[in-house]
Image (cartoon, rainbow, N blue to C red; front, side, top):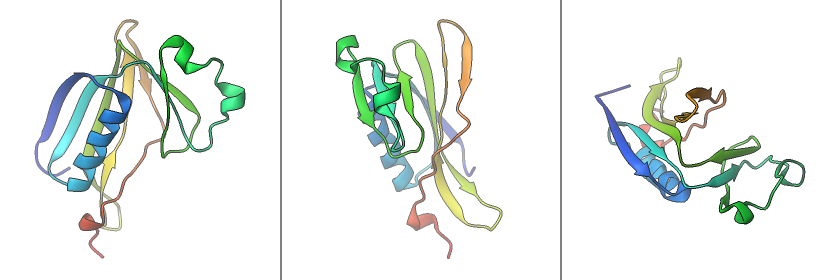
Amino acid sequence: MSGPLRVRWLGRVAYREALDLQRRLCHEGVGEHLLLLEHDHVFTHGRHADLGRNLLCDPATVGAELVPVDRGGDITYHGPGQLTGYPIVTTESGKGSRSRSPGRRGGDRRSGSPRVERRTTRWVSRSLDRR
């Protein structure tokens, strides 16, 4: 990480709006950020999701949105009361190249149960590439 980490509580933010903010912060490459927020009811799914098998309800019937995302994996639920953190930080690989990396960790504030996703997404900004 380079520079101070700017931690921001954003309150409840729609998933697509938060994703747009993450992408802008990542690609602008200005500063290190930790965005803390809650989402409205939303199901996200990666490009390998088996919606026919694993989506057990019509999201609209429970007041949720269904959003395709550019990651692997299956279906993930986000909603009110679930604290979600999106770090946007610069990382260096062992080979000296740098990239902007958003990751995600969340938990349920109401139950106190932690949730840590083992897979992360990394967006690489060409402006940070040292090659």
